Length: 138
Picture (cartoon, rainbow, N blue to C red):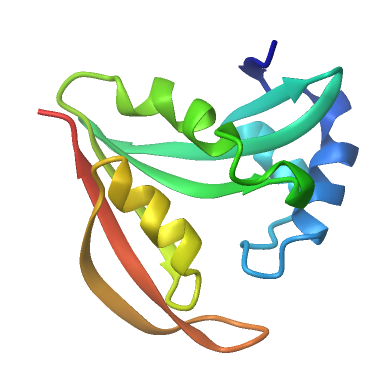
């Protein structure tokens, strides 16, 4: 049975490996994740995916990264990681997603996010626009 838990320093190697397999994800220095809200999904004693977010202000936060191991995508891992964050009352959650990442955009829309703006040239390697999405829990 999958378990969602707080990420730990011992998870960073597996998280880095998952992040490296996902060209469409943000490629942060994984050691920095420890300073944010950092969750992992553990399935069959293996890290299946991770979520990193930070509070912005009263009732607002921003998803910094959400990545699932390629072989485990489309199995509900991302939904399980996001569900606790989305359940906070009166929360506004923002995120950016690559314009070309239609699978992620569809997932976020199915969970109640709305596309609210676009940031041209936001991503590098390759250069690409970001779609800004917003979720409001009220």
